Image 1 (cartoon, rainbow over the protein chains, first blue to last red):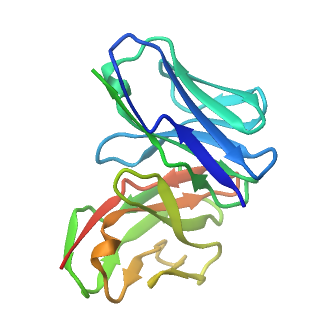
Image 2 (cartoon, one colour):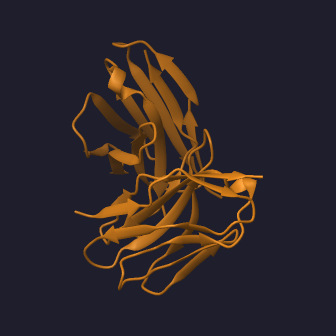
Length: 112
Length: 111
């Protein structure tokens, strides 16, 4: 069966520090991968998606970036965090555009 | 563009009460519709889905029917439990595979 992992689960970082969140999927090949951010009490905002290795599409301009160095690995990064980057970051995957999307456990990021 | 509008929360019910969380959508074409549940501190889990008009999705006592004429996908459960306390998200996926989520509705069930 397929599983999706995210780490770390919780992260507290100072403003201006770098960020690296990792997401990996097991049990499937060539998944479509997604990064979402959920601000407190709000819905999900799609940040990035990827349909293959090295292919990244950005939905919202910001100081975050994403990379997909391997088929089942999706990384969310920032060179300098802002206070407004605080939130709950969710990675998701689906096997094809017509399939259901499945979510990882999330990373709670607090920027102070 | 596509949009999903959910009933605003929070919703507080007593155990065994009837639950309805309204969801309406706007989209071109024939989207698939979903309800996800998020328990405290966790990611989203798929609760149920419907892929075409008049389909009924059901799981764990929850149901939702895809109503194209009213562009709705309301979530219902006949008798809620304390363990149903969570945030519920309505979502759609268009024919291009793009997903759009509602803002979520927080449900609290009291014993």
